[in-house]
Length: 332
Image (tube, rainbow, N blue to C red):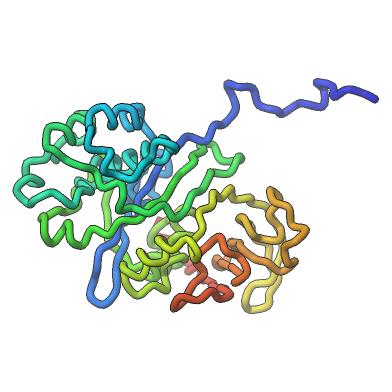
């Protein structure tokens, strides 16, 4: 027996160099539009992390988001769902609501009136503690009305890592009845409302840049015909069980939908037969939950036996195999 020597442990990070995935939260805001719905995307300033990318509102958890602070300042939290056994989930939801307010000016509180909303500070929104604003204006963050439908941890090879919970909130009534509107802050260059399919088409044309989590979420809901249908799916735990995804990326060769073999970067998620972090003994060898990124386009494949993503159309699971061809011209 030879003990493991330090010479074989080269490359193992120290506590200081280890990349910790920071807890964060993001909200997919939707609004009704004609006979369908749109999602809000913000374009990050190019000088910031993920600069130029179009993302959902969100950010890192702050100490002021903690469950204890909110419980002490808002005795009425006992009326909300009991998060005493999951303080981080409560904290993450507060974080998502705070970041949404700071980045867009939207306050997720159904009890607001248009008069009260008009008095809430819109300039320098991130200079006053969010809990103070809520206390001063008697705001009750609507933590119960935002289902958590997707959780992802940034892969280890990325320079910055996050453990992000994604939530959904439809703001159609807030905009119509309370007069709320989007006003971006210093972290964004612009914003736009997109139908999921349109956002993906613009990405394929290289008119906008999307990170993998945004791509996957837009793919999830591109077949939904209304915000209510999207809400029904994310609320249905039989269709949408809660999972935390840690994508695994590697280079490989595979055939494009046209039959041509090309090199690609493949990202596999929980449930895929090639996913390395799970026991695949009892999983069919053809189970797919992946994204293939070619030089000519991007392919998303999810087989109906995989229950980690809502590959659902009209309430039923089906195999999903979608390809977005990239256009040659780039505007980025």
